[in-house]
Each structure stands twice: as structure tokens, then as C-alpha cells.
Image 1 (cartoon, rainbow, N blue to C red):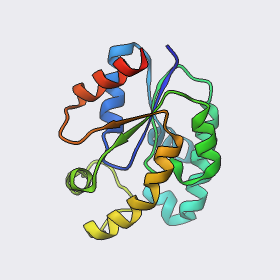
Image 2: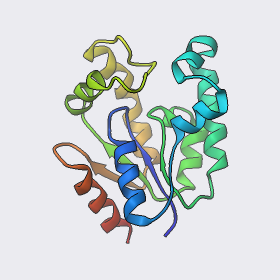
Image 3: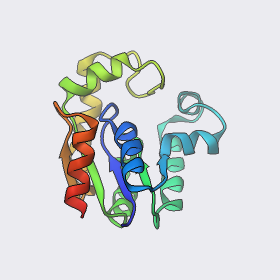
Length: 167
């Protein structure tokens, strides 16, 4: 089996599902946010504050290129699809699974997540978070080779659907 790449908005469950897929497939799990933090030597929030979103997206592209030919389960950052170049690269990494999640599901997750700083949604209202999310929907669908709804489903159910559809 080739690697599996997960895309989706913040709070969609990419890291949780990625870790479970890793256990089920025996492939190593790579979280792009962790790889970027290693590469930049600071938190994503600090990098955003110092360099802005465009510089962060460039780092994200560099990490993506390192793993274009991979045999890993990859959990990407929620904004990886914002650059056309990244969407084209993702299309070469099939299967790419879009973990489709509605704002009604991910907004409470984001508000309750105190372990990770998310620069584009920190201190934002639910309406402002939706404004970050909505332009990305088309990009997620464009880059994905498979769409899996995560609403009202356990991570185990999501993993089972992914593995069934890949095999």
C-alpha cells in the first residue's frame, strides 16, 4: 500500500485519524505541523507573528515536497490546500483523504483544544472561523481523491471507511 495523506480543516481529526491509520497499517505517522515546527525552530504561532502566513505556506510547501514519494500516513496542516502548487503536489500523493467536517463539529473542538495554537482561529468568533473555512472547501475537494465525512463518527469508524475504500 502506498502512503495515505489526510487533509481537512483544523479540528477535522487529521492527527487522531492519522495515528490510528498508522497503527492499523504499520506505516509511520508524520504530522506536518510537527515537522514544520522542527524545521523552523519555533511554534507556528511565533513563526506567523514574525513572518506572516505567506512565509509559513512556503515552509509548508517545502515539507510537502520532501514527502511527495512516501509510504507514510501524513496528517497535513489545515491550510495546506491554500496554494495551487500544494494542491497539484497533493494530487500526486494519492490516496489523499479529505476529512470533511462541518463547522458545527469542528468549532467546539477548536474552542476546547488548548494543546495547539492555531494562528488563524485563535481569539476568533465562530462566524470568523467559518470565514476562514468556507473558501477552503473547494480546494479540499480539488486535492482529494477520497472524501470521508467525520460528522457523528468515531475515529475508528473513519479509519475503517478509509481502509475499506483504499483496498
